[in-house]
Image: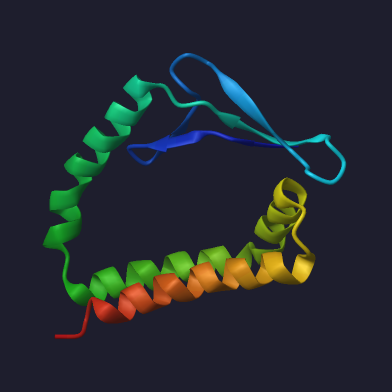
Length: 119
């Protein structure tokens, strides 16, 4: 079973309280995945980490931003089968719909990458 942690400050972490929640397969009722249940403190830490990361992101040029967003899209697509399987299990979606959404997300990253170098 897949367990999802929080991503705060470029590191995976459990919720500060240790709390998790189960996501159930809507078709079978079985637990599909578990995820860290963020606390208010975790949300504040995530916002602080994002704010701390912004100056470094803003300092890189548009070509490097484009490269990083395209790399993220490539990584997402390289794991499309895994993400689609999780999406299917968690939502009851068909495999085709799940794959469509994974590739849509990758294409949105690619679009964001292209916008950053226009102007």
